[in-house]
Length: 441
Image (tube, rainbow, N blue to C red; front, side, top):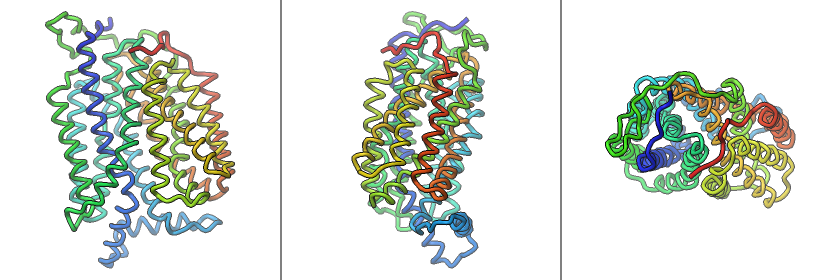
């Protein structure tokens, strides 16, 4: 039998801890995103000055250049560092795809709180390595450690599901999604600003890394002091009203509207196309409108701000299946528009459609996935669901950019739009709404 509902006051307290901690985590995580080109230029110039042609970084760059030269069209050298940043992003996502199911299963066995605190220990080690990274090898090690240990997002999703009944689930998942939008709106700009403050000559990015580490340490202490265990079989009775049960739960889901394979496949294919488009956007804005990094940053900031507004005011009230349907339709329309752009107005319209997609699809898929997992298996199932998405994110940039350079913008985005129509076929034709799907306060 499922455990009784968490009391409203206790639930609000846990949601506040989840929201604040996840926001700290994601802001810290996004510091590095706008710094990748400068970071990698710094390490490349340092290794060139050290006359080490056989260094790890130079070997990687040689491989990327060989890949770039395989295309019939000439690709500017300005993209070398961007490609390397994409390769590192794909590596991080691949490691997340490997680690996520294990982290989720550990949280089912030992509790969400324990798994999250161990994940935070890995995050601390990762950012500390970045702080100390005066060479590329150390920086690469920081990304590897981070990819294998980052579990905050999936565990926040599992905890949010633990303390939410069917009526509350959509609104709670939208809150988790809003953390992403808020962090991606403000985190990169803050990271870029901190990178202009030089405190350590050997590592000009030490200020950004140091503040990132401080945020992670504050988050870890906050979680240690204030986060209770949310896994139902671990809950202790509350002395006020006894509304939290210590009863264990059945491993069998009460009802199942969608198979895990269908949900995970939909997640993988959607992220495959969406992440590829997302990574190619700076290439396209530069090629078409000669956008600077600052102008592209403003475009991405607009998308993040609009997505956070939509998640807070609209997505949380939608049936999760309807949210997914709206999101994939908007994404297909945006990809079609991006392939035929002639004006900046069209670009910003497409960005608005992508903000709708960002605010709906993954939140809706996470909500549907949480309905299919019983309490005793929720961490592992949501971990598997995230793993499929991260696998798509590891492959998407490489495949889409290859398509972009082989076939050109119109064909690449046209194929992307066709792929998203295929995702729409799964969403409209195969996915089903769970028994209770209305948003709640």
